[in-house]
Amino acid sequence: MTKELAQAPAKRVRVQRTPVNGRNVLTVAGKDPDKVYRFVNDIGDRVESFRQAGYEPVPAADVRIGDKRVGAASSEGSIAQASVGGGTKAVLMAIPKEWYDEDQEAKQAHVNELEQSMKQQALAQNELRQGKLNLTRD
Image (tube, rainbow, N blue to C red; front, side, top):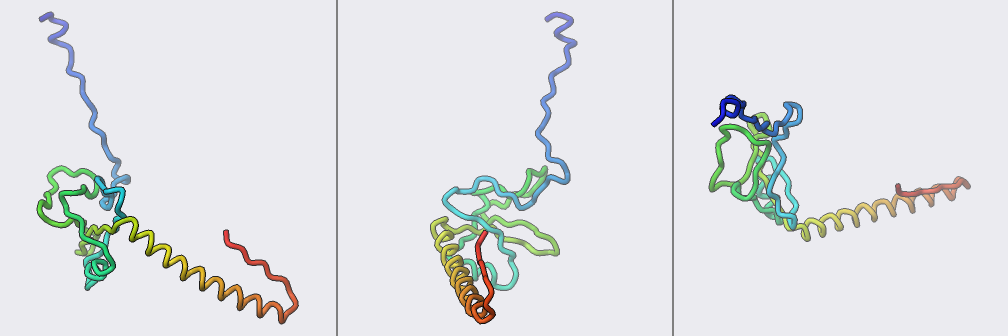
């Protein structure tokens, strides 16, 4: 080996870092694209309410929550959860995307009904005043 090669410094590989203000303990890696995920605070019967609505707790082995941490304990054999402050844990739950979309359509149908009734009421009141009313949705 030549003297120059022996004295050449080893090339350092810089580890990908996350700035302190860029950390997010509620990010989830490894999500199934056919499901919709949400954190549910484990307070009272909220987790059970979401179970009854079709959500299921996500096994910790299926996903990685938050940014990478040195020395973070693994939650092998348990459900995925995160500390959200004040001693509260949030459970990661998921529902099939198809069911989620159905729920969102039902919510939007209800909003549409309310908007329609408000428009009808406004138009009826406006006719009595002989004015003009133009309602649009952005």
